[in-house]
Image (cartoon, rainbow, N blue to C red; front, top):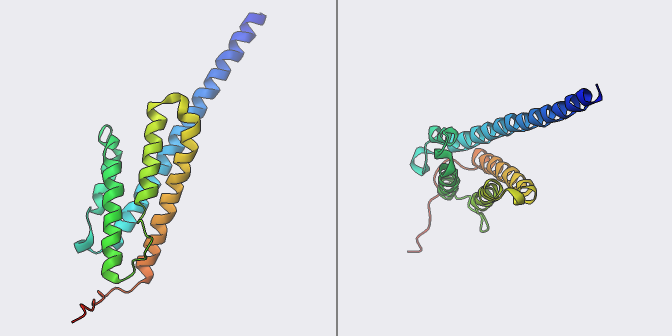
Length: 159
């Protein structure tokens, strides 16, 4: 009888861990979709001539196997689109990285998380933090584009 309860307790523990892992996957997927929605919104604020990527292309990140490479392409193209848009409005600041640095660091740390399982306990929290930083930076750039001048700034060529 005692063995039955011991076995039941072990099965319950395993179910709880499986349920917790499933919950983490669902929450992670919801956060990923939220980030992709933010990227789509930011690209929607960029004028078509300054876009290096269409807003709909962001959702390619949800396709399995393709999403092993496409997030890097997305971070790079979104950063270049933001740079081109802010430059055309005359809103570029000297130290702007346009989210590319934090986005690439988050992706590298996630890559280490998936490839080297023992390092996961160290790299995942940092990847999560850099992902949040990237998300906040994108929202900041969206706000700057919303508040900044819409008409192109005429550059004095010094003639």
